[in-house]
Length: 358
Image (cartoon, rainbow, N blue to C red):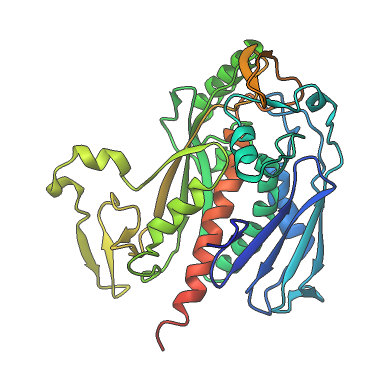
């Protein structure tokens, strides 16, 4: 097994860098030549993920300005590796010096220490969600490629702190700080986050992602099923504790007659349509042509200001108060990250499918 810093088979990425290091970045290999691309395409997505957007996010001020180093010439991809760099401008490691030997509850401090025998304690180093900016940069390129084939990937918040959206209006998603498609629920979610912040605590939630325009036939039997790879991609995100496809766990409460998506032939388009989509756009791990639908459960942020009991590397008990700038809820900033990972999977499988039949 290779070190887990790469993702994809044909459209392949490798991310690098740490939370408080000099920079983070990504190399994309396998992107076809001739795709129109410039830094503004990537910057648009990074600006949706960057910190300091509102009172409900961390106040770390990162511009997250991307530099494309290679793989693009005269506004088009060349087919060679695309290198992108994002400098860390506002890292403050001072808060971590006092707790550099302490294993913070809910963090990867202990597991990284056991795996490598040492760890970068500054903001969690490589385990920090700061790394996901590189994934968003790569996902922006994947999105641009998918758009050429009429595929659109978008995500939105459906639940925060137990408050669930009851309506869907796509135009609302970027009009509120929690990125919900329900303006009424969005305000309640925002208030719940602010309340948790006042209590020096954090809250989690659920993100739903959809991909429209996906053609039938994407996915590789039997171990690289499309839904399996999407689940793998989403479970690889920081703070993710569960993924469901289509009806998900609700399908366990249905009968087969309810769960089966009924097909009908569309004489106009000479193709099949589905009257429901409990399968979430896949059958046998291969796309059906219906919308791909998945949901991601995001746990509460582990960095909270409340005093907690922790232990240092020598087993000494300490009373820990985590200082610094942290998100009271990571869900709103995770929305573009979820989109990026699904876009990367679809771009990879789309290119793979083009090698599978004449």
